[in-house]
Image (cartoon, rainbow, N blue to C red; front, side):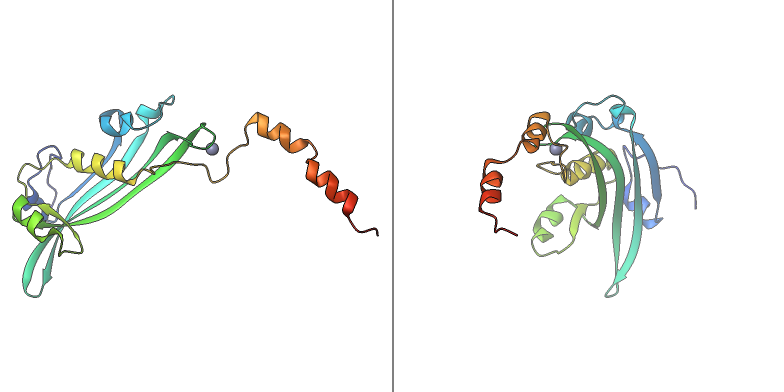
Length: 174
Ligand SMILES: [Zn+2]
């Protein structure tokens, strides 16, 4: 069944009952909190975040449960904390939430539940959930796996190491 959903005010009850699916490629310019957390780079605001939100009904021990699944992929830009150069950060979100009656129930059950809980909201803001989860998936201390050595370090590497010179003196004769 095809239904038009409004991710700004999503009726989660209907969305999960109908096992709705919302998919979008959203430019970062529309995800302002994510954009602000990035290192500004040319074209960054036009990069798109591919994301899908889907509703699912499950029966567990004779009880019907409503679940929400969020997946997102986007390549962000941050500053490497080692060499301070910009770096692309591929971010992936893949998270399930079980819907509960309200915020109070979510708080009460949160400690005991292994899964993430979300209050059943009839005017749910999916953009906000997307932004929260992309921000959570960003590394706290972004670093290249291997930094391009800064110029000064590269020059140092070319100089003979003082101990290397000593070692060659001490090397056993062939
Ligand atoms: Zn680096």
